[in-house]
Amino acid sequence: MRCFIALGCEAIPWELDLSVAPNEVLLKLLPSAKLSSSKSQCHRNAAMETGSQPGPDWQQNRPVSEEVYTPPGSQKRSLPGLRKCKTEVATIETELLRDYRFGQQQLIEMWGYACAIAITKAFPLSSLSKKQPTLLVVCGPEQNGSIGLVCARHLRIFEYEPTIFYPKRSTQSLHQDFTIQCEKMDIPFLSYLPTEVQLLNDAYNLVIDAIMGPEADHNDVKEPYAGMLVTLKQVKVPIVSVDVPSGWDADEPDKDGINPDVLVSLTAPKKCATGFSGKHFLAGRFLPYDIQKKYELNLPEFPGTDCVIQL
Image (cartoon, rainbow, N blue to C red):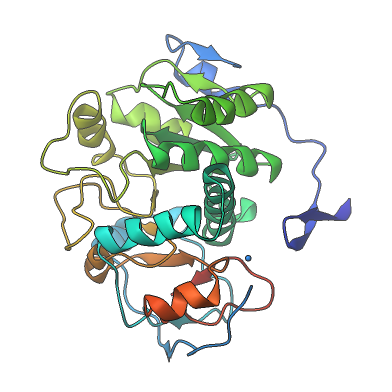
């Protein structure tokens, strides 16, 4: 059954497969884990188009079905000329909230939705190797975690089957609202993250890293997040990181943290993205032109009505 779904500024053609079974693989693979239901486009400098670059070493040893999907005829665009440090990004966000009257919930919703769209482009349902389109979304306690919750909700609407691991739930009402929305959509929450990596490899097609944002101190990672990073560094399924790979310093390339296969930069690429060799998406189309000009963001031209672009 083919239909169009209107979501945000996009109308998305969608194939509804009414025969897809509910997500039961997690209960079989993790029997002891408790589950609870619980933008204006600005026509500035277009990015230069470059040829595809070889991916990291993991791609050479991974089955084709587990590689990041590359649509026929897709092209890779160059990274915008200026990467921003975390202080500049924080200043941009403050200005959006204070002077442009954006709301915090509004920004998180747009970022989370854009992350979900990027994931559908990198990993379409048809490209997933497992019978069920299972995903694990690992959320931290701050803003990146809330973006992960929104991303999970939209992925559920797109017929993926996300499970959330959210070990330290924020007490802020905004974060609690996003949590309740996921629970109301019957997205399961794991009570703990298995340390046996093979369980994660068997249960999920990919992992979404929404643990630590650009504001996090990568030199002072406390539990349970330090242990989570150790586990996620060992998984063999692809990892998608939100804005900054967890464990990386946002201002410089760093390979001590998670080594993701896909990075979704929010607002503008951070300086650490210069050391990233995987598939890179940018979500920043909602930014007012005055902001782009003031901070010399030099964003690429987004195609059509897309809210994300592959760099």
